[in-house]
Image 1 (cartoon, rainbow, N blue to C red):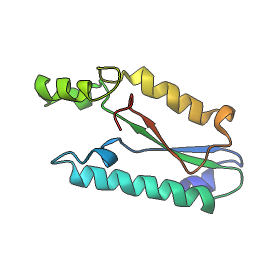
Image 2 (cartoon, rainbow, N blue to C red):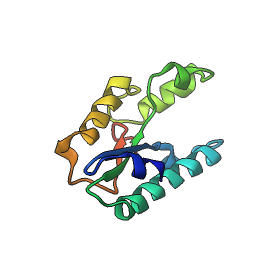
Image 3 (cartoon, helix red, strand yellow):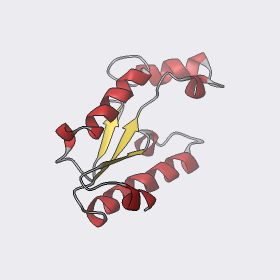
Image 4 (tube, rainbow, N blue to C red):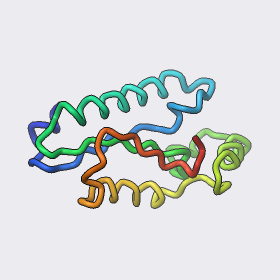
Length: 122
């Protein structure tokens, strides 16, 4: 809602969700629910805001960042890695490239969508 007043016409809003919304991982209920809310807000705002502003959500899969890796066992990381088509965690650059696309004019006709960047995890 705040972005609406600060963005110029024809801008882009990129919300961050998570592929956990579709995974149903034990212990991730609250996190997944909060990201599902982000996805629904994305869909509603894409129609509500107007002015040529596109609103999309980016839903990364497991990504090799310090925050993600902290406190997770190697067994859990290996399990997540094996669940996608590339048998590895995403690199931050894998996700960044999708964000750059969504921020570019090349994606201007895409709005109200949740883009999964998860290597076919879900």
